[in-house]
Length: 522
Image 1 (tube, one colour):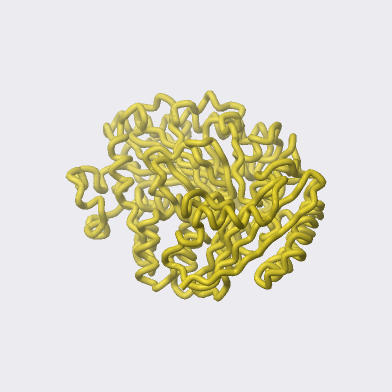
Image 2: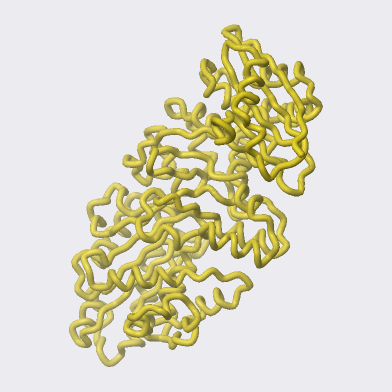
């Protein structure tokens, strides 16, 4: 047993000992089915703190010869699988966590040689009766062990893309990719290669060298979608256990849409919010938002307009196929937005090929980045938002129209303001601070149609429900009439209290009008 070769199960024990542990052991059935197949090389890319390292600890504990994990798995889902014991602690495992081989302040050039040297030392100790010459390249040492024992290796690499994220030195990157290619390409001693990182593996400049890996990403999650992030059912169970309001947790941390309409929640933030934690941005606080600021400051062919539209609650169609994994120099707007999907700042709907801001936590991060980037027109609009909301609660129609018109004037340079969709973007930005009191719904199905915008108050907030209808070149009264005609208020069966019916219109001269009616639902 070593640190890197046939490690123990301490990492998985730590996960199980945590106050909150969500059983993701079902993923082992998937990896078992890939052992010794053409699809044995896997790359799982997910944002920070989405459970990648916990997944590797799970696999180390299950496969490694260096421990006995039967008892640890006895109450988990995988223990019910017929092949559970067939693979349990039966294989030589190599576990590598790239940042562990890097000393801050030192040159990134030394990481790969240091890692190879440390690994060779442990192979020499573990297979002392087999290896008589450890001066050979690593892949030849592993090949020698395989030839003499007929035993293959499972290689687990955490943060495989660390070198690419820390260094722009193309020579260092190329040497590293060549190392991976030689280690994993057509290697008979590999039983499973399981790499995790933030970014996908295929599209670096030398991507053809790694085309034997199957990607499991935020864009193409495949069969592993539910194993990185918490599912809706898992979050509901935690809310019951810790007496938290599910709707509020959903508004804060949901939004990552996977195939089959599977909603994934940010696991880091859900865990932090459960045990008495305040609802706030936990995940975004784990690192600088510099990664978000880099692409939004570029303003590639209208990127700024797209970002403002996203902040306004809209979606944006993106071609995710041309992302080259270049994390600083983007050639197109689609590349920059795809990068934000992989980082977790945007969610992706593969059915519509659209990106969107997934939840309240991330929306606040965009706000912080826009302010830090000095987009003054948007900053000013956000500052007006609280005043607008107060005027709405007070039914001050002229003030509401004035504040929305001011917001329009401030963002007109970046939003083509010529239809109801553009108006919805502006109104969404204008009402930005409403997220402190409300769950925001756009094109919300209710009554006999779809309300343009609905603000549903959180359960602990004593504020009126707000229904907004938007019109161009029509009267605000007609917007109110549509709300009543289509019986939007009657559809909120579980709500009782005040409802504000808000009609907002504008004409070709960009003059805005507002009509507000207050009704009470018993």
